[in-house]
Amino acid sequence: QKMGWGAENAERILEWMIALKEKGKRKTVGKKDKTDNNPVDDLILVNNRHFLTVIDAWAKAGKGVMGAIRCERLLERLENLYQSSGGDPKLRPGPKHFGAVIDAYSRADDRESTAEHAEKFLDKSEDLFLHSTNPNDALSNIVYNLVIDAWSRRIGHKSGERANEVLRRMIKNYKQTKNPSLRPDVISYTGVMKAYVTHPDGGKEALQILDEMKEQFKSGNVNAKPDFKAYAVAIDACVRNGLSIEAERLLDELDDSAKNQTIFNTVMNGYRIEGRGQEAETVLKRMIELADRGYRRCSPNSVSFGVCMEAWGRSKSRLKVHACKELLKQCVSRYQSGDSTCKPNLLHFHALAGAITSIGSQDRVSDVLSLFEKMEEQGIKPNRVTFNILIKTCASVFESEDAKKNALQVAISAFNSLESLGISADSITYTSMANVIKHLVNHPDEKLNAFKGIFMRSCEHGFLNQHIINVMAECTTAEQFQAITGMSSIETVPSIDTFPSEWSAFATVDHTAQARQANHADGTN
Image (tube, rainbow, N blue to C red; front, side, top):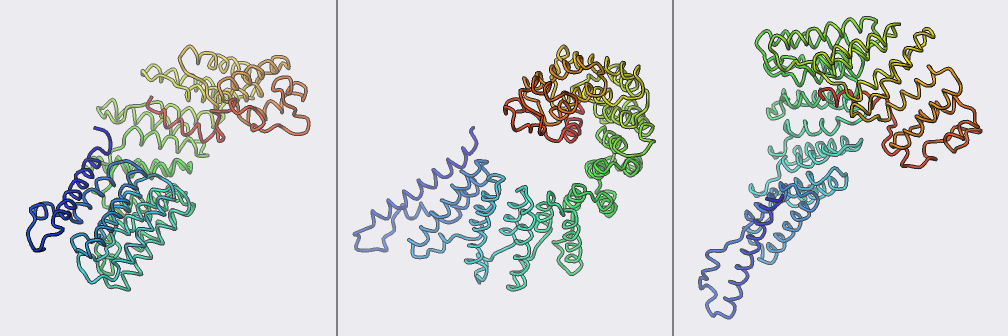
């Protein structure tokens, strides 16, 4: 069945009911006794509950903006029927109808305009119901929570502020009306924290909101007590804003029985981003300790070990390689002991290889090669990221001419073997090869030909980027650069924007960030 099939049929039945009702009314016109019962009137009694059912069906139909528009039109239809009926209470739209429309626009898409539209229906709800004395029409925190949810689904700096404004508006109306249903609850506060997750100061804002929730709970608002989800969102906001120590502090506040593998991994990921290997490993040890005490949901998995290894790999510690090797041993040991969730994968070997490369040892090329050979012995196939790490490692060699010559041979062999293995090069591959040519190829003619080959292949596959252009401009004369690229570099290095767009259609801007992202995305392939 196609998406929205149920909502379409529900609306079709509603229209049929309305049509029968209208037909019954026309038949009674001209009768002397207006009190005569009409069988159609007795059987077909359209009311606001029917409309709510259909509006809610469209809100949850997954039809995006179109579904939200259908909800809005149905609400307008109900309002018109209510007016034409002379104010029949059974046809009066209520807060739930507006809430369903708000929900539909919340789910519609990720644009700010649809969240703005959702908030307009909150405005109208307040006008109609905020001071209503009818218990059935009393406004509650539900409609406010739905608008907060709408803003939490939008990515942007404004989302957090807008969600917080709705929260403050709800609190103001609660204090003004003394309506207990308007008091913010855990859903209200958690939604605002969620909206702040991508904000530049999202971590600090989330911590303040979490503190407010605790104070609310202490003052008697039992529905504002922070739950696991509230802590999880606050921890995520802290991690994304470089406040991993605060994230770990929040983790400590949770009861051990509430903790799980995911929330530990989230905190460790914060330390990974910050390059704090020792702190990440401390969190990992706590996971193991809790698992040994019977809290199996805290047991680490392969992601836990991989994230911890990368945290060490990004650190400045000279112990990073040793630490990564020990973590890999632990992961393998747990797997061999029967823990299938700790099966080693590419992520672990890439993390260790990255640590070896960054430490700058003289044997780093042979060490990385040896590591990847062991990886293949365990049945783990290399991917593009594996070769990118190896080529990047080769490009960093500078100790001696013999070492540079060996590194060049390894890099060329790795690059040339990609096609036979069914692996395509990407922007990072070509960037690393440009660095290999720059640092390891000494003969001027060989260097020029190598740059020409890399330039042509990167353009052919849409992976030309500014770094490749800059390296070529640095290592060639203006005449040579123009002969290869067709562009002049006499006054300034040409921008990537001056080249045909198809040459850089798939290129990346931040190569380091993409390497890290690819490392995680391909970790289990």
